[in-house]
Length: 170
Image 1: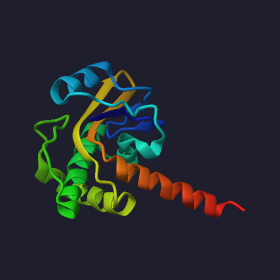
Image 2: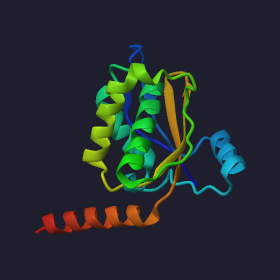
Image 3: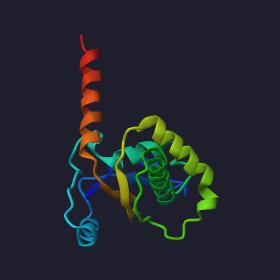
Image 4: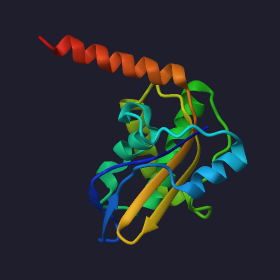
């Protein structure tokens, strides 16, 4: 199990309030919950962005931060991500969202857009999102993610990026 916390710069939410999405580690209550529910957890919050699923989630929802509440966006991207895994790789499993009452039909178009973005940006990533939790305190937002970690894919993607960078250097 891989719990992590995302780090991003200040963004506006659909409500018009400024919120800072940040991270320096997993929220203790999230990590405790994951370990109680799923067993041992590995904290990747200090890892590079390429290793952090929370960072990829934030990349997917970034263009929509002005128009939607971050909790709705994170729940929609979780659904989209896991639907892509089921449709593209026959990988499925249980997951939980922030908002148990999310009306899927109201957000179907957004979920479809996020599925397209996932396939375009992270087509080979096969990590299944188990749980996602948005924590708000004042103007700060923390997004924690627990995933089934696919080490082979993560290292393959990292090696490909490093190779691309080394080929671009003179």
